[in-house]
Image (cartoon, rainbow, N blue to C red; front, side):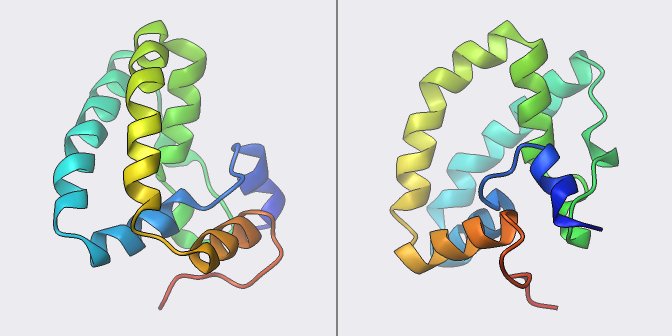
Amino acid sequence: MPHTEQNKAGCSSCTLYLVRLCYGRSFWFPVFREPLVIGMRLLGRLHGIDYFTVEGPNKDCKGCLRHLKNALKERSPLFCFLNGLVNPVFNRLRDSQLVKEDKTTAKDFAAGKGPSPFQE
């Protein structure tokens, strides 16, 4: 799958890669993130969003929550409001678990500049 498909989905950085790193580095990060994921999936169902069909350059991109989040931003005023409150906090907590090289790898992969950061 060409990298342009992922870019069409609105990926400037591979959030899935960064989140996986954080899950491995912090016991509390999943405790914070998983309720947010459940809420996004519920809102997605209410809006009839089928984000599992969107594909990217990596087999793990299929079903990535980035696609759901982008669709919710277009269709749900409630999500936009809640995301405006929660996203800055989430980003700070996520970024506190990462180093500059992690973010560079995620951006390069999303831009099609590097190999997949995912371990097989």
